[in-house]
Length: 176
Ligand code: HEC
Image 1: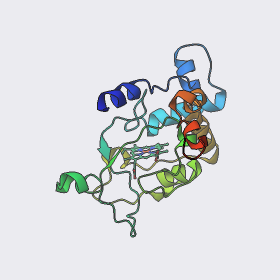
Image 2: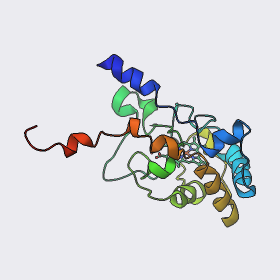
Image 3: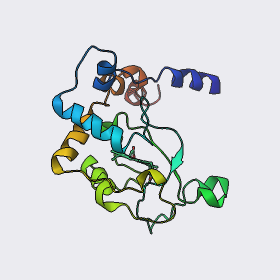
């Protein structure tokens, strides 16, 4: 069973986004997307590294502590103090299908995420050094950055019926 699961996971490769097509030379970014890509490389790529858009490390991106869940991040697993409030850097592929965002789903829109990075970061000793310098983006920059992030969607992957819950199971009449 576990082996079958691992084999299935290996088939889950999302590589048909506009970003991938630009990288393979079959499509071009629009001007907005290209500008957004430059902004991304300058401000975000240190943690959300291409081409998977994650370094799969743990970091603190300055979210104000959530007083309800009180999630302590990786420390909950390792019990090590240095892992307090460290969260896994998630991939940014298929963001249109993976909201709400952050470990506690506090943001429903990408514009809220961008606003967090420009004016919501709470400086404390845990915030990762990549975010020590304030990120400044104009309104146009924000639109461009989101336009770029949307090029990481892979609709063909998300809609692939091989990866969906088989609906027939639900449609079978009682007792069959
Ligand atoms: C210090 C490393 C770091 C940098 C730099 C960084 N992020 Fe993040 N990002 C994180 C971490 C860690 C999380 C997960 C936090 C959590 O789960 O609460 C995250 C989460 C996100 C999410 C939510 C993804 C999801 O599925 O929930 C988005 C979107 C995002 N970042 C976009 C960006 C953008 C855009 C930039 C640049 C403006 C950026 N990040 C810069 C570390 C970073």
